[in-house]
Length: 60
Image (tube, rainbow, N blue to C red; front, side, top):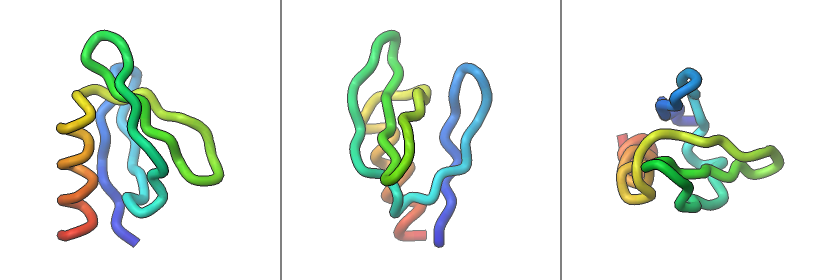
């Protein structure tokens, strides 16, 4: 199980990279991260930046 730290304007999250279901573009340079069996997280960064963080977490 690989955890990836994602930054949010309200605090940071540790997310299990393999539990991410989707990424959706949000407002103000943020991305919504959908979690399998859970809710959504609003994190800082574009979809591409967040995807790179998640892929690096899975590969690393």
